[in-house]
Length: 99
Image (cartoon, rainbow, N blue to C red; front, top):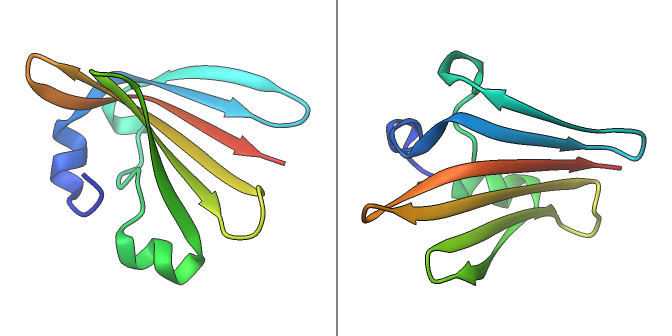
């Protein structure tokens, strides 16, 4: 998913639920295709250059959350929820956190 923009576009639920969390405000938007900036998930090389770590957590047998964090701080935090439907994994939600 992370290396191919076309794959990201094909396996992202539209509209995509995008949550923004700041110390002052929480808001939710449902983004349509033209509003989504791909790639959503940084490539492996970009993550390495920027010190961003990736981890996974199984929520259920058909749902996983992918976490990205800045190395050494929580200043950058980006969570993506993937759900398996009809045999395919799709990105269904993004949560973006800033401090």
